Structures are given as C-alpha cells and as structure tokens.
Length: 245
Image (cartoon, rainbow, N blue to C red):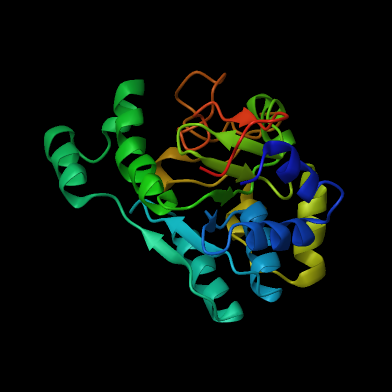
C-alpha cells in the first residue's frame, strides 16, 4: 500500500530515467508507456529501451496514421530491438461506424469526431491500460494551456491508475537537444511544421504564430485540443490519498 505523498516524493528530485526506474520497481509488471512516436515519446522510449527499464511500450494503431509515423515506428524497433505493442480498434465498432457514416464523418460534427476518437483511440487505450497501475506519457506543460494546469504526477480517476509525465517540465528546445545528443529517430513531419502528430486526416502543419495544438482538429473550437486520451480530469496527487487499490 502506498499513498500519494510517497509516490510524489519517490520521483521528486530525480532525473526522468531515475524516476522511471523507481516507478518500474514500485509497480513491477503493472506499468506501461503509450507512444505516438512524436518528439517527446521518442525521448521517453529511448530512456526506457537503452536503460532496460521494465516498462511495456505500446501504441494505438488507429488505421489513419501518417506514412512517416509508420516509418519511425519501424525504425525505432530496428534500432532498439525492443517490441512496441499495437492496440487496434474493435473491428465491429469501426465497421459499423464507417458503414453508416462513411470514412470521414469526423469532419461533419464534434459528436462524430468524438465517436471516431472513441472507437479508434479511447476504447483501445482502455484495453491497453487494463490491469496496470501506472501510465507513463509524453505530456509537457508548455504544450497547451490545458496541460499547464496538470502536474507531473496525477491520479487518473477514469482509468484508476497513476499517470506520470517524466519530461513534463522539458521545453521543446530541451526535447530537440536530447534527440540530437542521442541521435534518436524522430518523425520528419516535425521538420515540416507538425509539432503534434496524430491521425493523418485530423492533423495539419501549423501556420506562423499558431498555438502548439492548433494543427489538431483545426476545424473545431480552438479552446480544447484533446481527443479524450488525457481529458478524463485526472487529479493531482494530494497528501494522504491511497493509490494502490
């Protein structure tokens, strides 16, 4: 049994690698990292793989990814010689949606877009997280106003587990410098104005002066740029709350 105070203190003052090692020891066999092969996720995958930290790495294969994403996925497996587990949408739910509304219904309404994200991303994520107690992500504070309000360690009520963002306080320049220092493979779309890369139909390059998340679901209200993966109102870990259940 561990409380939130202990977990927060466990990672406090540690480097990202040291914190990941500590959490892997606290949650053996019940800790996972979700990658979408963006800059941040490639940094964390490198940390996990080169240090042989026992954290399962997985990705959500939505079926609508960029060719460049598939390339960096394959290249990452080649370089590190480690598996990256893929979780696919439920075929029946996906077929029913596409048969009823066509392959691009997400452009027609927010409800349709959320339905698509729910089938292609949210439901597979729940399966990927099932049975685990700690979820590692590549979230950084400066990515959006919504994420600035987060903490590096949180309790995810919806998924009933701890979330840890090991490079939460990294700047984008920190991330780029790390990739360059260790020659980490990365998605070349980043060099073409794509700071945030998701499904191909729902991601575009940024225009000058636009917010980091403006290229995602650009046809919608700009105030909320989340698909639901990190929008379950996770709670910052506060003193005295139990976590291991």
